[in-house]
Amino acid sequence: HLVFVSTEHEPPTDGPAIASNFGYYEFGSFVEARAGAYPELAHLVEHGFVDEDMPGALAELAAELPRLAAAAAALPDVASVAKSLGAALGQAPAGTTGVLVMNS
Image (cartoon, rainbow, N blue to C red; front, side, top):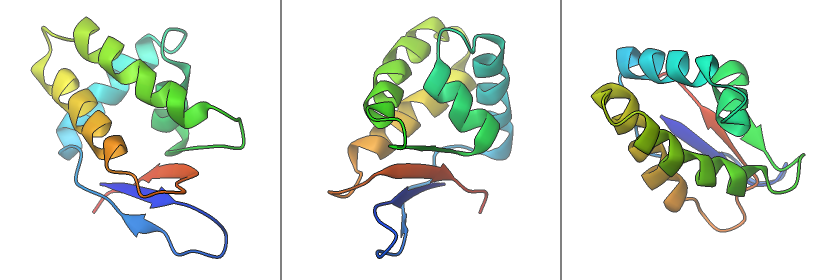
């Protein structure tokens, strides 16, 4: 599932489930093979988080998702995770400065 982070003084907020373990594995494999085209998604897959230490990172992450979903249209697991992650980002609470992917 996705976890939203705002400030050091606010507790993280649990977000929705975004994938099954297998679905996220397929998604991660697809992203890692194309890391140059999807740098924020690659960071998310490799490190488990994206934050605003690099200004604009969350916006770039959101922008990469529809492109990846279109590129992975023939791979339903990958496209589904991209769409779920995009929908989850759309539900981010005000003031979100980062997201984490957690296995729950």
